[in-house]
Length: 397
Image (cartoon, rainbow, N blue to C red; front, side, top):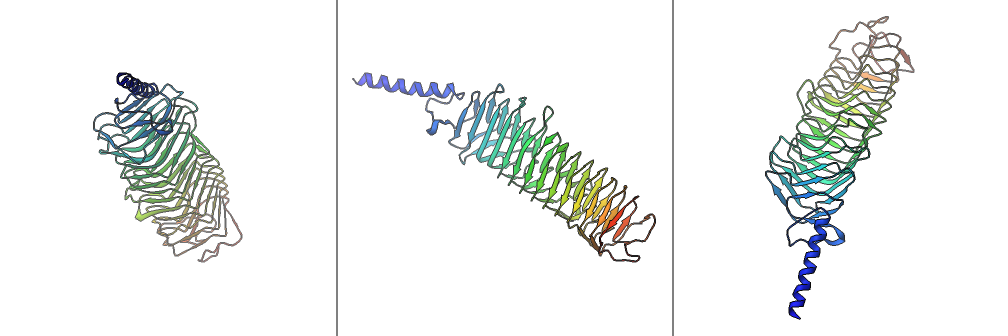
């Protein structure tokens, strides 16, 4: 009887190990399937099958990827870090996922001890690939979350400290969709958010980002229907090429209710729109930048409404080039050049207030060369003023 009991116990233990291996994680003989059907991870691991996984202790590896997920484009993988820490060395990645259909990583700490490789890297070729990152604290490494590419994305309620770059996504095969919400990024070395590839309807909201901002704290390119709302962006850079928020080639996008701040008039432009059309910039505060608070370049049919743009080294609001933009209800005070500067053609200006601007630049406005200088300069053609602009200076505008 005693021999039979031992034999049955050994069979039960072997079955547990075989089940864990069949789910794609072959761990030590002491592991069993965790509660709720989740597979425990307690050492550097390679995952090859769909499943739910839970980390059961702190894990570190200074040489190899700590958690490697190798898929074929159909796998769905959910990893709960369970409050534990995954630590990678200066030349290896904490978590790398290759060709998963769906990936979830949540609830724990990811640490890279160097600055040359990413903390998390996702490489996918699937047209419907998805990734979710929630409730993580990520520190160190070249990039906190590096994806090339992913189609549907959720990045929510994470903290990124002392990383070289926060979120970097390159989509060459299909547009990015999703939400980046409620994240805190502190002391980021370059960009907090960098989306250089096409996107559709991405919502970026309620994030707090402070960065040195090499080239830009937030850079978004080739977007359609983007929403950038209720964010705090602090550009700590003194680099004259650094933007706080830069939108390139955006159509029907909205930038609203954000605080976009520079430090001691360092960096470049607060909110920069390049080739942006049919979009809205409303109810933002942009101040303390090394050039303009809000600037439009080659941008048409946009509405710049109810913004406050003060204490910038150049102008509060500058339409450098573009047509049929509406500049309405903005307050632009105490800037180094003009409160509002208009170039381009057939733009509309109304109900704005500007005062205390230094006018440290020549204004050669056609028609009325001294109109409102130094608070307002119109060097465009066909500009229309409507309602009352509260802009002092003879002659009245």
